[in-house]
Length: 498
Ligand SMILES: Cc1cc2nc3c(=O)[nH]c(=O)nc-3n(C[C@H](O)[C@H](O)[C@H](O)COP(=O)(O)OP(=O)(O)OC[C@H]3O[C@@H](n4cnc5c(N)ncnc54)[C@H](O)[C@@H]3O)c2cc1C
Image (cartoon, rainbow, N blue to C red; front, top):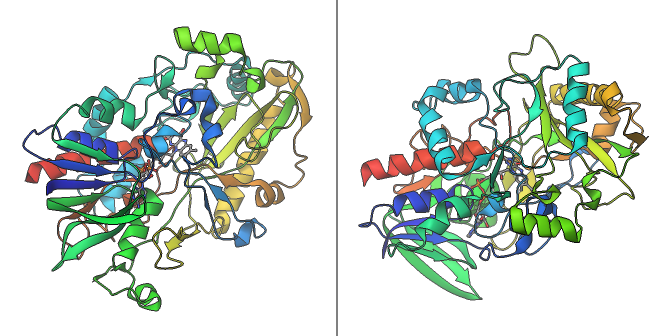
């Protein structure tokens, strides 16, 4: 019998398990479906897209998207210790002050920016948030191009300031600093923390309205683990609602249609799905300087011996936050600039060198949902982000594409600009054909409708959720920092009771 069971060793779960096990009197079990994070490509920053569609990737696919010409989009998610923090692009952005103030104003006391700032600081004291070590000349050209298009240098690239610059990254000495590296590894020597990998949680055990443990499958055999105090669900924006639904916690109609006994009727489980869509404006590069030739033996040696060189690149090296309309209260477009071709998540490699400007919509009005296709826990749930179901989203991202085209044509790129990868006459048509996820799904177990402001699940005692799924509204920047902050705050909320 454990005191706490944490399900999912991702960005959030590693933090919660590590923080709870700081108290030697508490016995904590952390369960992860994927393997340990041993593969070399996890730790070499520039190699992250090599993990895509590998056994370390859940390799999800959305349902066909009505507003994207019926395309079904690929959604990678990390399946290993560290979860998506072990395969992401390492950009560290806190998000806007107004994002958190909005969470608070939606009826979630304790989540305004001034309330959560100490938890960001706690994250930053553990995860190494660093300046990049090797910035490509093309990324410098991007920031210069921004200046030529009246986008000034941002005082910080934390999401709150308008302007351009180079992202800070979750790296230590040029290697990825994941939640597993920063939090879990140092905690592993504690005798009161047990970590199971290759263990797939299939159902929560609920007794008389109280979560008492979890059922799981390990190498084909079913087992159960029990928690005396709480179960904390950290399986991410797809895994957490899926497990609730499989356990009979969710909308009555959906559960009954699948023959799942209703344990607690919580109508919003899986609803409110939000993500940041992005689209690439790409060009060839006339000089052999892009990251396409980063994988050389001298670069490997440089990386291994000194943690330096292009293999330390997080690929999305530079960026900018802009307002497409002066009347926008907040920046609605974030750019990610990659000094390399980035076509179909980097899975398609056009010949030669190139660069990619990725306008990303960060003020998102469209809302989607996640729902079960079957009662089989190994059957991925249906993912319907309903991208661009709100027309304003399409108009805004199209405005971002226009700015990206202007940036690409500015003087700073004259020495480098080759042939365009895409001919873009109609920005909206380009989005419909080429938009993809920026990998930021959130909101499917939202605070205020599935969990309360202390992250306790409505209708079930001793069950908290702490991961990207609890964000009521997506933040205006990359989502890992916000998720880690949520996990730090959750740990404090839980320990206050212990
Ligand atoms: C390719 C990619 C690039 C990204 N780039 C960035 C970036 O540069 N900057 C940024 O801020 N954000 C980025 N993100 C987003 C960021 O990584 C996520 O928002 C964040 O990691 C979410 O954390 P989480 O804890 O909610 O989920 P995850 O980190 O995904 O963790 C969930 C964990 O639960 C496990 N799990 C799920 N179901 C089960 C089950 N049934 N049983 C047992 N275990 C289970 C999973 O295997 C996983 O380890 C990126 C994401 C991806 C995928």
